Image 1: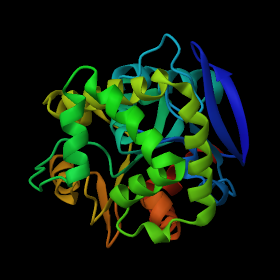
Image 2: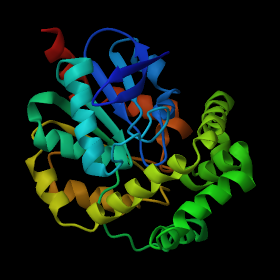
Image 3: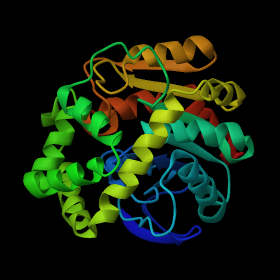
Length: 296
């Protein structure tokens, strides 16, 4: 696992897990980072060229004068595929990264061999009442200035370890299943980002508002209808952020897309149950077909 930086209209940090063969690019979700994929990247790299990038304003990619909106980061992903990879990819996206994967596959079919949506941030029948922590965050994001203050306060009050554990409690059905190595890597990154000051929260606020607007817009379904690549939809049955009914609704609209529901799993299966995630991905015909096409 090597950390690298590419110039894609500014510095973009990414993790190169190595490997040769079909390129596989993994995109994290809101508040995430390339290291979200560290529990699955090495094994995938046994048969693929595997890369995970940090979106603008997240992980170790600075925001600088860029935007962290969904549209801006979708353009960043496309630029990354063009400039760094240089050939069509298997695109895997979690949460907001899944939404971005749909946008990329719809707008640039020539750049995408196949798509894997992992608990993607998609519109759906979100009928469950969000947890109190999420309700507070949603309310704060709607008040100018308040979101910045609250996010800064959380970092100072909880500390890096407390913030990581609180986040895992929200996105995992059982946080104890996340490996200590993965937890420690996220604590280390959170400590590093705590020194960024106002920039630390600015990207999160921009991206949160952007994905909220996009999930309320019917334009998503037009994008989904335009995707021509094979698509696997992976979704945890106990996802508190994007209920599994949203994934079921998605495949009803695109019955050619395959749905795999992971029982007893939350929003980040690649972190919580990496072995189950890997088994699910490797058993999908679209994953094998993309590799065979690249080898021929």
